[in-house]
Amino acid sequence: MKKIDVFSELRFLSYKDTVVRQKLVEKTLTKEKINNISLRIKVGGNCNIDFIKPALNLFFGLQKKKIQVESLQYNNWQSEAFKSKTPTDWWIIWLSSMGITEGGIYRKKFDHKYTINAINNIINNGQNVLVILPETLSAENNPYSPFVRWRKNIVSKIVKDVSKEAIIFSPENVINSKNNLNWFAPRYWTTAKIPCHPDSVNRVGIEISNIISIAIKNEVKAIAFDLDDTIWGGIIGDLGYENIELDPNGLGRAFLEMQRFLKDQSQLGIPLFAVSKNNFEPVNNAFRKRKEMILKCKDILGMHISWEPKHLAIKKIANQLNISLENICFIDDSVFEREQMKKLIPEMIVLDIDEDAEKRVPSIISTGLFNITKSNHEDKKRVKMFRQDIKRSKSKDKFTDINNYLNSLSMKLDIIPISKNNLQRVNSLIEKTNQFNFTYNRTKRSDILSLLNKNNHYLFCGNLRDKFGESGIIYVIIASVSKSSLVIQDWVMSCRVFGRGVEEAAFNHLSDWVKKKKIDKIEVNFKKTKKNKYLQETIKNFSFKENKNILSLDRKNIKKFKTQIQINEIKTY
Image (cartoon, rainbow, N blue to C red; front, side):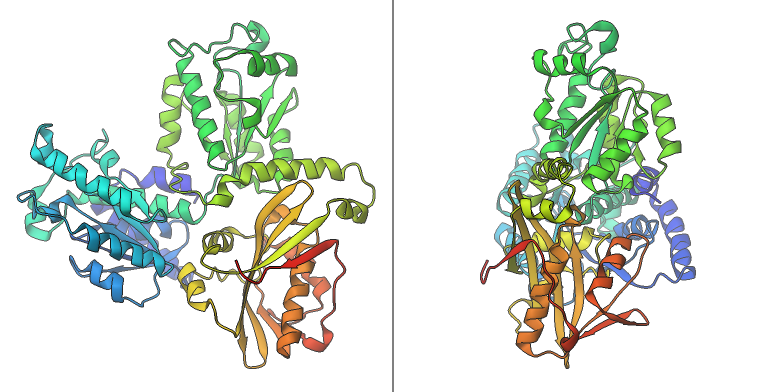
């Protein structure tokens, strides 16, 4: 089941219904022999949040992922944060107002320093944290209550001082939701130290499950959107660019809101493509001459303006960016175009936007698809990198010989030791890569951190540069020495650099390291999937011998590859 379908189906479920469905999903996972733990989560805080666990298990279970959720002792999470050595991927910590006030009674001094130090210590250990901020108290229904300023002061200090790598979740949107049956339920605090009604805890659980899922891997890697009656009002071919509706104080407001939404996604690293059945000249005039436009041509990676069927343009975009069709989101006001896209490209994300333009952006936001809590440095550069890839593609068309094209790029590969400085990007690449992934081990951030500075491990990543710009860290290899073999735990590479010889250059560096250390052979437990067929073809050149999915290569049989890439080994980073 797609993540968007899981979120929309579960977000308003009651706690009891979630428990029932979770048990059914657990049986399905057992029946399908899905036993490997995909995610290890600890939940704790100054309240009882055991009621959040069914939502976590159900959300990930519907995506065929088995997770392990450990409850921390009530109000004991800080000490666990300082002493715990148990491998954990995510901590969910609820700093409940009900806990701080002992049920909404006392305005005690909050131990801010100890709390922040505990959260930051978790992050320094290479683990992820989602912090649920102190929730509104029922006393705050009086806007002049002393509790208002007291709580807001605590919240502002937490947000200010906690590590930027922590994910902050405010329960306010759940509290204020029109679909929320009941939040304030002090009887549950009295009997079980639950900060609100179990149904509301469940709703928080679904929301944060979606947030964690997107933080691990964002489904949307590109947005293709229509123009007429989508980002402006009216048909530009009929009205002319001068008369399309863009009045921010009138009917144009909703269309400008859509433009604002799209521009924000672009700035978070999601490339935009305009796909419209139109003539180019009036469209170009609208972008150049209508000053009300929030979206500019520079914000849009590609303008597919023609009269050809839109699904053909979408497939060109996927090929151009070398991304899967399932990672493209399609936004179009036309029911006909959306239904046609669902039939012709069923794997793509097609949003059923509202007929009322005023309801469209809120409706899109409510899907939860765009709850991107944080973007690392390379995520924000992604649109720029994709723009460079398009220039490379156009340059390639000018050559008839692939070697001449590769030589023309003047490529340089910086091979860098994995460190705390690049760990976030390294972890992100391991988590998200499917097409070039040898093992699908998905070694966790905390586990990588524990391997740093060990002499018997090969821990390197690569940053590719050429005449068009920098591609950033595009491959990662993690391997360990076991007896006389170097065993590859993870070898992943971004699909954006396929066909440029990066894999061969990376292999040359790996094999030189093996020879220098006088290691007898290289081994990897290779996992074949439908998605890594490019890799399956590529590794035939490496001369591995295969025995029941174990690939091995003796040191004496390692061959050096000729590439058009200049290697620059960086000793420290």
